[in-house]
Image (tube, rainbow, N blue to C red; front, side, top):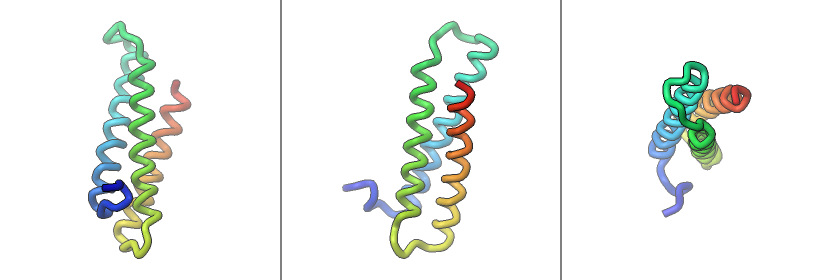
Length: 95
């Protein structure tokens, strides 16, 4: 089964989970870089964070591109795209 065939609530839920996980990992990376809790390279963690945020953004865009979309799903998808895009820009500029 393709991801585009899944119902909108499932895609939005997965988009949220991928996005929030990416944001948390990015925040952990920034905090560790600032305060140095663990002496480990943060490059792989930054990469996984950005990958998860891009995946969440892509799923929200998949929902928005569907035909005959209910208004509530359209609004949720637009809000998810806005939040993930701002978070993505923030984490890219903080590298």
